[in-house]
Image 1 (cartoon, rainbow, N blue to C red):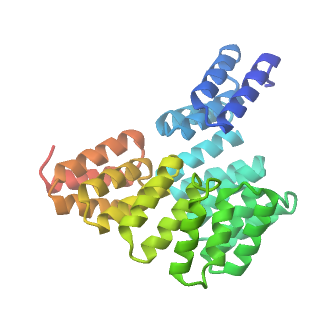
Image 2 (spheres, helix red, strand yellow; image 1 turned 90 degrees about the horizontal axis):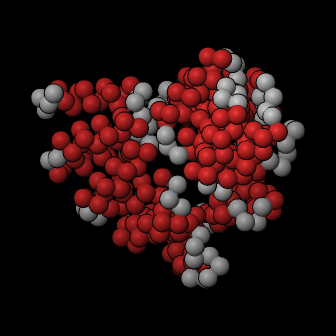
Length: 330
């Protein structure tokens, strides 16, 4: 089924709006197109993907599954379902969806879905092979290159990771993630206090004061130096500048915990947990925090709230059941 001229224009408008994080406007464009062609799989799968971007996981899943009942191998719907499974910590199901999608659409975007699932299973070598295969036809694809560098860094191949990040930086000088990675890898053999002082000077410059990645890197270096208060403040700045980056709020929460600022640590890590309940370290820490403060009902409420956003997360259901049994709560 082809998009008609009206729907195609609306779909293209939605793509542009989504790239600029104008999600409500993008949703409006897609829904207007769906009034014209209500059963078109591309429009419905695109809307499901938009829901996912907004954290509306349940709606994304329902819509993706409805597309797949009509077109069982539709790659974009399979990709969305794979992302849903990732968020629910069903890694094998996610990998299967991404691999099925890749059979029909071996684009870099879908390849990166397979890579994400392989990384979750610590199958880093397979992930690298997937990326290298995709790079044969897309040698300057920034997303593929960055993911390769991330995996190489994880595998302790720091020099090779640095070379790739430098290449990304050459291809896109405005890529703050690559710039941060280059700075971080180059500083590995330098004294910590020198790196901290240099980062502080850089962030005082008007051209870098709003760079979330550099604030995050400074937070990391301060945390490694045991300067948890300063580190927490830097992670807070980073999160204010990049509120979609859950990593920053997690790290601030860990720092507040080390500072024994327990109510604030609970607030921050609770928000991180609601957004990403698959993070085992966050889950473990938040449980200890609630235990320390004696607020068992607060922990149960947090898990119940999280399940509303991630209703198919079986591990969360099991945790909630055990907690209610332990505290005799119906």
